[in-house]
Length: 227
Ligand code: C5P
Image 1: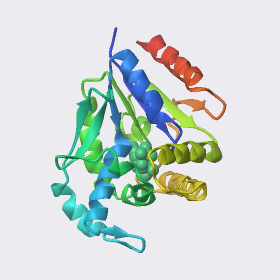
Image 2: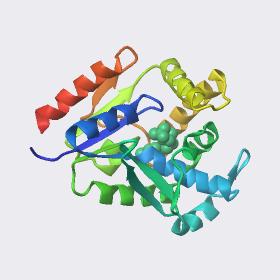
Image 3: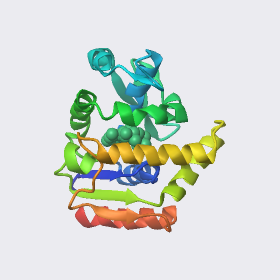
């Protein structure tokens, strides 16, 4: 069986990571969540007061990039790799609504993107990888053998993310989550550097009305046709 690169892009909370993790597990591939990398950089910026509700010191953040080391480490109990920021496991902390509220602004900065993309190239150089994000099929691996573009209605996505955060015990309202999903989609799709767009050769998966199993079967069969 040949090893390929599977690029999964799409809007916020379309369930990309759930399907990507399952796919990687079934194929024996490595899964890389590139959103976690932008989230970890954002967490660093928040902790160092480089970004607040009405302030964003992009210059300082760019200067600080040399001090930000990100690493993925496989957690056998969870079955996927967790992200470490300068040696600290930040997998849970980066998922809060607070980080979600700033991450898209941080992800507009070209120097931030350049550094993450370099690391993503290294992670994918041996193929056998499922990578999800916003620019994987267009910028990071335009040569990926299988590209998927996932979408669903904003309401469906906000409801999913709201349920997830509630389950984790976070105090959030549906309205706040809905606003965050819409605002991130807007910033992600309209930024100058590597905007979220569908690669010409990507297969669109609208999962508003698909169960997880249906979605997974569809994607697995697309992969198996190539492998
Ligand atoms: O995938 P997730 O929702 O965790 O991504 C968080 C944010 O990181 C996105 O809304 C986007 O701003 C940014 N991102 C990006 N490029 C990627 C992955 C994520 O700009 N490849």
